[in-house]
Length: 189
Image (cartoon, rainbow, N blue to C red; front, top):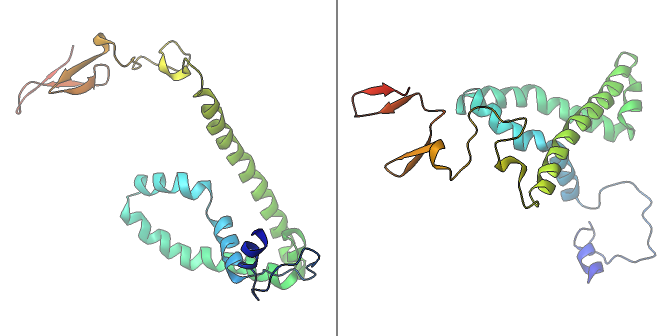
């Protein structure tokens, strides 16, 4: 069964033999190459940070210059990296030896990858911390006695921290004005 599934991803669709060794370093199918490009292009930055930046920078109006710069600058540089890597069959440190003035570019790419790795490892560690902490009986973020809480912290279900108007729950410490009627607002003292 496994061999039949593996044969779906081969270029010639011939069954895979256990003793068969691959000598060339090419993709078995073009779809594998496309998936590898997508996996290197779409990461945590695109999934988590891009919607925030788009909303902060103007929403739909931000997408117009983003895609213009992507097609004018981002895609050609990405294609250059792919073409140079396939042409030279080398990594980033040695691929740019072809031109003397570009030798530092490969090392800059490696340093950039290491710095991004450190940054995203911190984000992953936060996610893992909150995943493990969410299995506790008493959640850390359920009480107001923690060092990171400020004066706006309230415990859900406590009557004196919130009030209800038309079944809508408002936080007293964040509301600046109380709506008395449709035309006037009175400051909360």
